[in-house]
Length: 316
Image 1 (cartoon, rainbow, N blue to C red):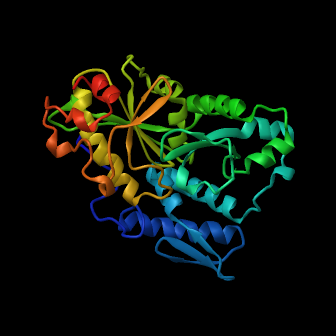
Image 2 (image 1 turned 180 degrees about the vertical axis):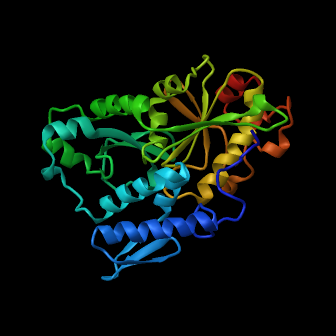
Image 3 (image 1 turned 30 degrees about the vertical axis):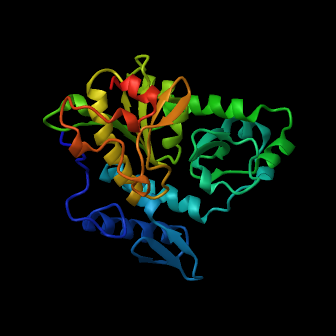
């Protein structure tokens, strides 16, 4: 398929990642779903406002709908609106069994974590951390680490959360698509999207995700991009095409990060044996380490701008 071909038509809605026609349909579904919940709203571009002045953002919902078939949109919208108007539970509202089964690791930008929220948050890279969250399907909690330890001081929260995330990697509803330049199919990568806001976090259980997709680390690592919560893009380093694929992947991740709701990271990382190393740079730090237009088939990257381990894995 063509590189970066998307489901949406050419004419986008400026406030949402949808076409004008899709956005209008979403607005009608949102208004109807709120009405069924007894709430009257008025829709303004990327948000809706009820009679009390409370605003409800629509960008996450639009992103979720964009990954689903049109027939699935009413149910996606209904569940989203139900979660929006339902009271958010607290730890005290949840029994121990629910907490144990719902705890998951979540990948977050380090800059979003409030000071002292989790002194034991595990750094993934310089710009990313993993924290324990409580995933309730339509709703999610991210309680402070101290609150979790007070609730169950003997429970190994991170280990349990990691196991639960691994299980989700095998059963979470996902849409998997291979994208590549038409003239160079070996330079493509795999894109995974889903309604769940934990899709990007599946990169923390990369082996399980690869197994789900019928892929495997060949011993030279995997290039991983997590531009926003609902998406992860990967390329197994499996031969010469991976070096050129990095250019396409870097551009895709950076451009998606810039417009998608719930951004995670604009960088591509090389992941090997649990270690993450950056394989691209943001515009703020100069040109990316790899750009698609600079990477015709078989060309080399500049090894001086890559970590030596990354360069060695890519064979450059």
